[in-house]
Length: 524
Image 1 (tube, rainbow, N blue to C red):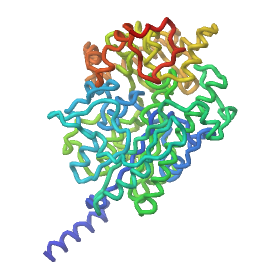
Image 2: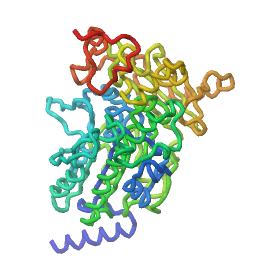
Image 3: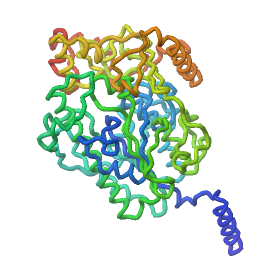
Image 4: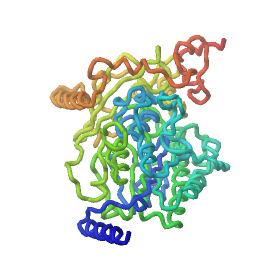
């Protein structure tokens, strides 16, 4: 036994000297991923924003890496989170390409893989959601980990969930077996709507004049600015609980070997943003810290990264090869090279994004299929069904857009004679769109109709379709209708347009009475 121990010691020493040693199981890094619900890129102090205060996010960026070009492949909760958990594009995940779907049992997630290889895995509140996830035997699956949801608290506003996320994390840390690495998913319910109107000013002490710029696709008035302040207050609530979690790790001496990733599933729940495919829809905040694993902390990273990169990152730092985990092949790439400041491959030169079916509001449960590519500061979009309404049908109140004061103001602008604002948010779109996002981040000026854009359009479409073909996207094989054939996970949502036309009402908070452009069908 002594001889074997000496041999193991000598081998470990030699490997360490060579820089090739694999970490012992108890030395594998812990993982904390904090996922806000509907938080936009740029809305954090680390990005220079002065009307959204995020000291915890800024702390992560200051002690690690701030990513400036991080994107989700789909700007809607379920498909974005599916991509995050599997390392694959939504259109590579069958029904999980859709919002509120039934998750296919054949796709394993990284928390499931880590749990099978020695990690203690947990989560709080919102993991993969909304939708249903069952295994092949019809048993419920915990796609993001075992739940720790025991603590509630009085929320600061009526729009914020009464959940003590940080206390739930403390329970998780107490449950981790001694010496076992762990992975925790902090899934906030903020800044998802609904908001308590006026809470940003009344309870957060915020002022509308602090907002430096209102996107050009919305009216710039007090109602919209106060809506933005209410959103900001909820971002700050998410950040507050993150800060408490970081303090817990520091008190336990766990920060050094814990990879902390802070991000969002998609951008803010405002018209022409959440659920759409524009620069502001898919561009998300992202920061990472890991004192023992990130070289040259305090860096800003401008390379393109995608949420599909998180799953391969977590497996790689845990010392696992994809083929040993039972997961489907990754489309993403590990960020470990960026952490180590030693890239082994050229940086990604493009971002692919798209959407299929999101919320209800179109006949026959149809979606609004789009694919896009960002390359060299240009965004090219291909809309496969331009005759459909991108935000949902008018008669149902554009239900594929969260109800909000800003949405109502956009619709009111049309009745006031401003068709441009309405058209940008809810009007039908051409087959092709092209935007110069460094000078037009709100994507207000479609360059696709300009003759000088013809060659660029052809090149970007060719690159996009070639990439999608290599990924096995059904849209490229003429089988895109399959996405509309997948049922919603909730029976109450299926064939909703048809039932609405017979008098059924939408769920509370999904739409305001003022958002209907035609007479609302009477209740039966």
